[in-house]
Structures are given as C-alpha cells and as structure tokens.
Image (cartoon, rainbow, N blue to C red; front, side):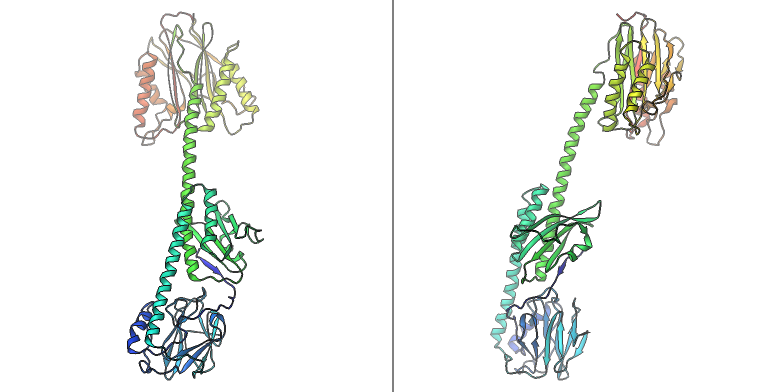
Length: 573
C-alpha cells in the first residue's frame, strides 16, 4: 500500500510567491539560476533576451488558487512546481515538485509537462508540449493561469540582482527550517513512543503524539490488520477536542477501503513490517486547513517508526507468554511426576526397576507400582493418545482412577479396566483413548493376573532355560472407545528369578536417524542377551534403544517397568 492524500478544493490563502515575476538574468545572476536548474535535472533554456535586461514580453495570470489575480512576467524559461526552487511555487500535494516549464520558442512561448503526476492542460486538453497563444488557459493540476502575449502595467519589472540572490537564499533557508522542524518532530515522536512496550499504552502514545506533530489535525486514528479476517480494525481514534467520533470512523474495513472511507481532507500512511502491512495511520485535518507533500512524507516516516515500536511490543508480549508457558510446563512436570511413584515399593519376594522419559516436558505415559494388600502387589502401565499437556491431564485422571479401581476386593484387573472404561466413556471424550495393562501379583504363589486394554503385550523371561515368552492373552480394546467392551484377564505362573517386562510404544517405536524403528525384534533380542536382574534388564534395554536412535529426536514418551521374582518364594509380610 502506498501512502495517499485524500484531497478537496483548497481555500484561498494569502501566500506570497517566492518568485512572483521571473526576469532575464544578468551576468551576476547566472550562478543563482544555474543552482535552480540543477535541482531536479531541468536547466533553464537560453533566451535571446538573456542578459539584455528586457522587460517581460508575456505573462501568466493566476485565475484561482493561492496566487489568484497575480501576474507572472515571462522573459525566459519559467519553472512551475511545488518545490520552493521553482519560479512559480504552488505548494499543494496535487502539484509535482517540478511540474512544468514555460520556455521561449520562435518569438512566443511553449509549455512542457515535466512528467507530473496530475498533468498539464491547455484549454482543458492534456498536453506534453504545446506552443501557447494569447488567451490560452494553462492548468497545472487544479490551478489555472491565463497566458497573455503582452505584459500589462501591473507586472513587476526586473529586480536588482541582489534581491534575486536574497530571495534564493531565503528559499534555501526555508527549506532548512522545514527540514529541521520535521526532524525535531520525528525525534520527539520516536522518543515518546519508545517509553513503553505495553501495546495498549503504545497505541495511546501514538495517537496523542500524532495530534502534537500535526497541529492542523482534528482527528487521528490507528487501524491494525487482523490476519484472520484480512480486515483493518480501528484500534485507537482520538479527536483533538476529545469529542464524539464521526460515524465513518470506528468500523472495520478492508485495507484498500481505508483511504476512501475518510470524508474531507486526510492523509494515510501504511505501517509496514517486512513484506507485510501491520496497519494504517490516518490524520484528518480541520476545515480550511491544507496538507502538503512534506506532511505526507513526515507521516510516512512516523508510520515506519510506529510499525517498529508495535512489532517490538508484540515480540515482547510473545516473549513474556513463552516465559509464562515455560514456567507452567515446569510446574506441570512437577505435578505429573507427583502422580508417578516417588520410589518403588520394597516388597519381600519381588524386586522392581522402572524408567520414565517424556518426549516433552510433560507426557501421556504413566505407571504405578503399589501394595494391594497382604501378599499382593499391583502394577499399572498406560499410554494416553497424544502428547504434551492435554495427554498429561488425562494421564493424571486415568492413573488415579485405575489405582483406585485396583485396590478393593476382588482385585481382578479386568474389573478395574471395566470400571475406568465406563468412567471415560461417560465423559464423552471421543477424541482420545487410553491403552493400559493392569497386573495383580500374588507373591506367595508367584501368580500374576493380567488384563490388557489394547496395550503392548508383556514379556516373561524364564530364568531356568532363558526362554522369552510374549503374553498375548488377556488383551482387549483400549479404554474410552466403547462403553460395552468386556475385559477379561489371564493367569500366569512365574518361577524363581523370572522377570516380567512391561513397556509403552516409546520403546518399540523408537526411530533411528534412518527412520528405522527399534521394534519387537530389537526388544526381544536385547531381552535374550540381558541377565535376570530387573535393574540390569532395564539398563540394558534403555542402552540398546539409545544406541539405535542415535542423534534422532525422541518422538514419543518412553516408559519401562521390570518386575523380578526372588528365589526365596517368601510371601509378602
């Protein structure tokens, strides 16, 4: 989006021209005119009258605008434009800095357009170059002049060379003063809005300082782009008198409609960041005031710094949000760890080893090892679908529910799974499910009762002959899918020094840098090579997984529980 000025006819202003009459240059004036010609690459044409001190032979009479009724004498090339170095100065945003020139040609004068924005017209016909006749009406943008072939008595004759030099110096001084004023306003604006990184305060500072920078402004506004709707949302609107806001303000609109929405004379400048648009600054001036290209240039510069300040504010707020999220995750990790066993129970006749490694700060895997009563021990391992905070929240609920369901008599794990499944289904959480395995071990008889809800099958490593047994019996559907699922269990007898291995799919689906999974084959091979100690099996299996994965990132939570029977056969005391 380019910056724009919405215009209306200007009121007449009693502003004297910097050079109302252009006379032939004498020898001591040539340096002044050379400087004027070099400003934008247009050099004054030579004239037979140059240096002769002749009075003007033709005139331009202003028919409207700031010089209405005034006559400009023509004796050699005359430049018309918005810049103060022109011979006829029209300080209006609709006039180009160097709009047109009139130059002598075969005893008369010709007008030539200098690629102006709003064109040059002779008798309401747009021209590039045209020889003028007496009485022709020449229009530069909206301003009309009548060309006369003979000078009238009201035309000022040649000024002394000192006066011409003085006017040129005053023009240069005015340019410097204007540049200094704009620079001071820009510095004040930037200094003011840099006082805060809070977006609400920053928006207030921007509109308040826009009113300070532009004394002619009656109302200012900030529109911000909503990426979701691609519409401009008015974030701040401030009137100088703090009165009511006009009806055409305060409505969201598309970017291209912002400039067209403002009645009266107004300026708009886009706030750009990178290749995108953050928003638009709008300045509406009071009735009778005027705007120049310099005002628009200043607003555009202010918009650049406003965009930088708003971007810094947004990045600061995002940084604070990330810090708060990081703190919340640390707290969530601590809370989730509190649902896991702080230490494994010391139960006579059985030994445990376990490891838990979430893929993120928090995860959906869980396990628990607890005494169910005299001579019995319960083991739970589960995996909630998904990862991160949502999985961790459900994990906390399901793990506590399963433990509670495993505690009362009878202690059949299938009954516990049935109770928790119905509890999850009642909550209508159809987008999630839970796999879990529950085991109840009678230590005295070394009998394990196993029920699985869609979880990975456990392994039993027989100490006597090194046989590795995969227990697929007792498996059923995951929790939370169907309320009428019937869960059932299977019984397994363990011998002295036999080990029972339970894990989640973070073990079997651990993926290497070449996208190869560890799999059941890798797990079984490692278990066959391991010893009988639960801690040794746990360490050996984890080391094998890490060696397989290498530098590849961890994509899933990893949980491992190993239960080993002692060779004493003693019951739980």
